[in-house]
Image 1 (cartoon, rainbow, N blue to C red):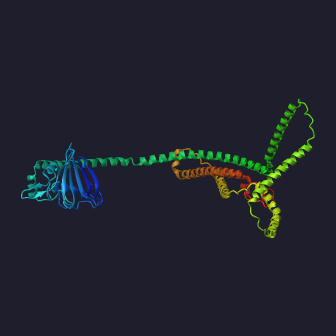
Image 2 (image 1 turned 120 degrees about the vertical axis):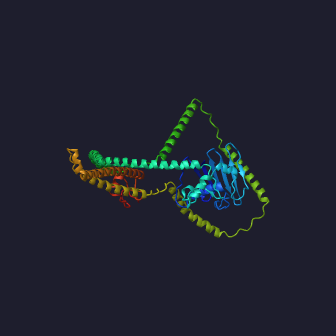
Image 3 (image 1 turned 180 degrees about the horizontal axis):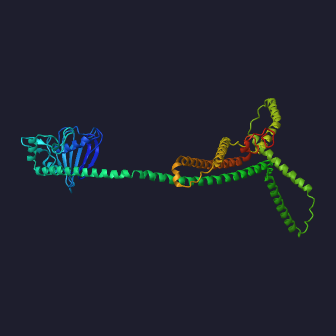
Length: 499
């Protein structure tokens, strides 16, 4: 019995493995999907046909392997010029190869292992009882003549088994038909019983819908109470925001604190004073050490001697200079005749006239070097986007608040005294449920908008606090004034404006 069939580069199959469990195996699929190629692979394995059309395009060979139930693997390999068989028995390391059989010849060992060959009849004719073509099924299922069928059963070694199988199949078919009639009759009785219980699902669904409506009403009431609490909390926060806005507006009128003076000159003065103090302390210590000493002896007048000494020293220095100059000038040639120096004198005069202007420019440069670089104006694109987003969010929050006030004025649904009356209030309850769902959605949207507004306001306030003043006009820039009505640049000469 074949347990597994493997096709490698065979017709349309690149590599296909088909496991064949015990019983009946059916291959289904659309046209041109390779079903007939599987039957053709079995035919090539059992008959070794001569054509080579079975090799897949671009492949060197086609291979069909059949693994039997005892573990033996039989392979049929078709190459462009010849075909061969490989038989790998259980436990063997290398397969047995059968080649040079001739066209259409199958080795006897392979025939005995497969047992799928045709049955030879009297007169030289053979019948294939295992494989059939698309237009001609298996031999036993076709309408053949009586003598040919008799010849087949007479030639077959297992004809008795086949006849017994055919009788068993006929008996089993009769039993299955009777069983089918009995089951159809029982099914009709059960269907009649089930028809009497047909209203039960509708009743159960109605009860489920009523319970769902009651639960939805309870949830809607709870959500309405929660919305009322949120609206009260919103009013409290709005009052607090208004109070904070008034406080910020009053604080914005205050003038900014004076700028601190530079402390570096004061630090230098303190350092100098400390240095002077240390010098005074050293001189005082020196005077205290010299106080016990006696007065020095009176000095004789040395002014004349000092004058003579200075004169001698000056004379010696002059003699040395003249001697060195004479030695240096002895080797030099006579000086050339001097040219006219009027142009040089004129140039020197012009340079001397430019010296005062150069001095003024140098002083101005030194004064400008002490100044700090002008501030780089910060980018205001992000601030403008934040302001536009805050304005849009405030408009949406106002619209949602008005919608919430409108929904809050809707009266709550009346309480039902009897649950059975809910069957006639389906549309009213559905409408009320939709209204509560809309209210919950708007409530969630309002909370989301409030969170977004708070986030944008905080970012804008941080950005404005980081700037401190308008980068264009230098005027004071606060979050409250900016959100109240934007910012108007101060003109040149105004308080806090840029000159």
